[in-house]
Image (cartoon, rainbow, N blue to C red; front, side):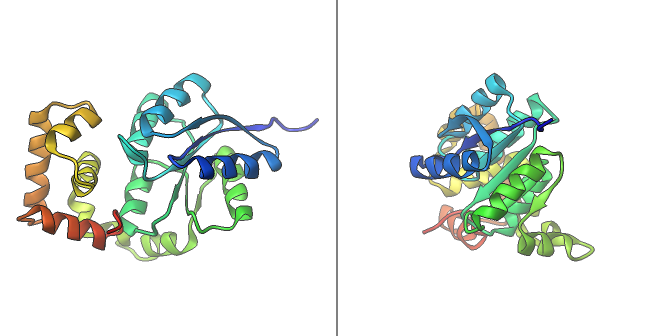
Length: 214
């Protein structure tokens, strides 16, 4: 008897990437049950379709991939999520692993590795980019503790990312569905923890950590 066909949700804000990923997966007998262009849409569609696994882009408009992961796993702790990122940032990787993603590859990964990783994640296994995993897990302390951003909580990290992208505190409050006061408190704590004195310093640090491109 043949095994059950894997169902996947593909989340990426670029239509060309979604089309290419759908073709790659379906050519390898992995069904794409839904596509999302934003983090909010990924969260909503996951709740509707409950796929075997989610292939999530890191950077998307709105709440973004990391916040979408947090919301999905808060709703379903057993959700199997694999992240794809254009960046090989240790900070992004360690945050994703901390949120419970089971797979993480950069978009430069070979198609065959992406398909293999999707199958492993859907089966309840893990598959991480070799170089990133080596840096994170290769020493006793790990990359997470060596990153200057490791002092931030997951929520502070997401606020930091949005600030670096140019969003105001009020914008961030609306995006993350929190009050402007709470967003302001996160902003203040971030600046204090990272010893940042200006928006320019914040953007520079985000660029150095691979969170944004300038």
